[in-house]
Length: 226
Ligand SMILES: [Zn+2]
Image (cartoon, rainbow, N blue to C red):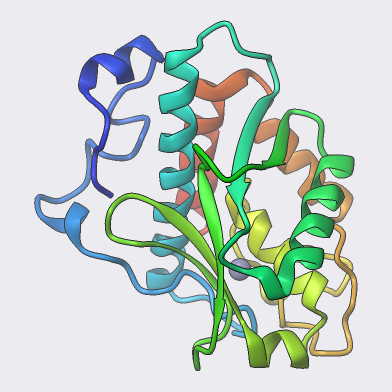
């Protein structure tokens, strides 16, 4: 992950390089684009995927941190802005995913916007399926694959990928009632809502404002095996 903001901005936001996961990053690694975080249909996530999930989440947090630093008097609930203009085919599913998450959690809010977005959605054909990743310039994006969204419930795919935005790792072995089990339960699973454990996890992650979200996310994602 590239560090795009000056250190003074970081300290103004009460953040440290360690909290952002940058302190431990090996030299040079920050510049390299990571492999896609998530193939959605995979039955077991690799450590490479988990690392990319983490990089994606950090990119989102970094973007949010930048804006919070510029406006420290902002609301207690953190707003994460997404740009859906590059994924017009999935406009309905993206809006629905934001609605699902916004009605499921209280400490973080997803909001559509074309300027100053914290991450974006893209669409296209990719044999690896849908995934969350970073573009090598510290920007996070969710890629939605056409074929996969025809095979699997498209709203579930989109809501699952959006779960990575909020800091949740993959758990492919979980049941259909779990959103982050992704394609694990098979194409017949159409549940697009997070279960109570997933909702609590996201709320806890973002509970005490932004700095706490960073620390919690680091722990959670490390535990998931990056
Ligand atoms: Zn995933």
